[in-house]
Length: 94
Image (cartoon, rainbow, N blue to C red; front, side, top):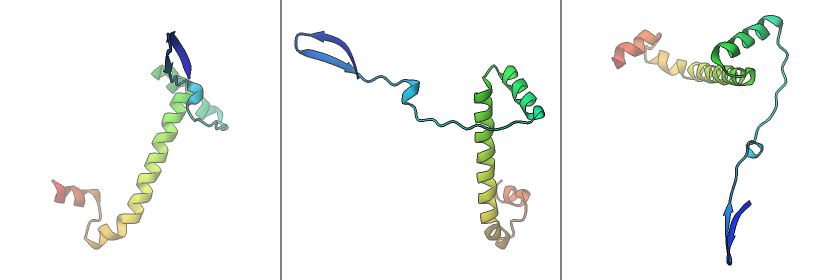
């Protein structure tokens, strides 16, 4: 809490959130030269720092993994209804 001003007996309190208040954790990974170069190039191209690019790539890969796991889980149900390919699904939906 931060005291902003005081007038007579009235005190205004402002709750400030800083980067230190945000819960984060640190991950240290080893990159081979090729991956390090790709990360550096992607960072320069996008104008974001390497950490931001790496976080986004990790977030995207984890979402893809979740999708693939879900797909594997529902495939037996889809196959039982003769949905064997994406085209089979699109044909019924379209």
